[in-house]
Length: 179
Length: 312
Image 1 (tube, rainbow over the protein chains, first blue to last red):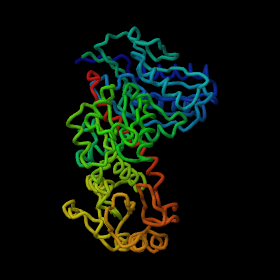
Image 2 (tube, chains in turn green, red; image 1 turned 90 degrees about the vertical axis):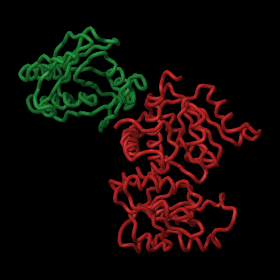
Image 3 (spheres, chains in turn yellow, red; image 1 turned 30 degrees about the vertical axis):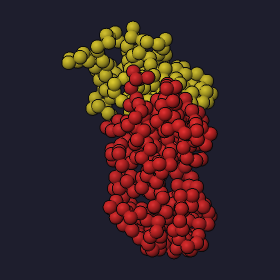
């Protein structure tokens, strides 16, 4: 197994700032916009974006929820590994809101498909956008594309992309792992 | 540990403590799901479940059916009173006929103890025991323990007394197994005629003085007197039973702590429990019913994930 650094801490910072600016361009004060981090690893990225928007760009009162998609996945009873659920925590109304779904890596698009179904259980959003930190292009199984992306990556199926966050994994770094 | 150790839920006796914790953790997620505006997930959309009730039931059956529908399973219902069982068909024949219609899971209530275990040896589908005679009622015990965990934070170390008709109660037996596996201390309390002879071998203490039992416990689980299962008189009159083993407000108030009151339903108001106790804040009877749906969703979800898709 070998791994290559795709983005170091500084590059991660730059990408995060750019994404925050893009979000502000489209959503301004976020008064009708909510962030939804997809469990398990999308929530670290979502928390980071929220903190950045609040501290560096002085956007106030951003609502952030966590969405678990386990029960909506299309590989239940189809994959060898058992699916483990995580906590869903959405303490606000999504009806008629602009929802930004947030995940760390966009690969086949199947998680996002599940998230789109799952979010409907909480109401009918006005609009849903997708923010992913890493977009593994040319590997989609479904017609799903991000509205905001940190970095586009070309990778083959044997490879894995791992996004590490300082608060959870010790440092900000993105690896391309070759098995 | 993210998988059950069993293929069927036949009784608490057959599952491990880790299984129970896994079911509880999964139920936590489903409890959140059933409080959403759309209370449904698509997980079991390719699973068909047959509810076979060879004995009457209202809440268990509704609870199972609701849990199945919340998981998007296809559901067929069967009750013995309107079926070929009356025409003399055997249990295996009845079930195999239903299974040949491509059913993946069977939820069964049956008046004979061990019916689920017997069936599991002869058929291919996953079986959930929804009560077999006076033997076990595992999902009830799971939801009872889950409700205790929800109210008191944990089951381990808690003192639980089960009061009433222990002899005829599958709820009592499953509860004893589940509570012990989770580390609670269990006592039973009731007229000696309604305590089974084997009770000592289960490792539970017997208390015939209701007042002492209440003083000792953190949780009192009040069972219904099962008149329909009594072929002889086990106590002189209902009035006498109520005086000795009924729970009323005055008794609760006389305790120096606030205990949790449970009842698996249906309640005989004024017999084992008075109305003011059943409707008091200390009673978690309706929480039990709500948790029942989440627990049954968890059980069926976890069992379904073990059904091999290639066998269908």
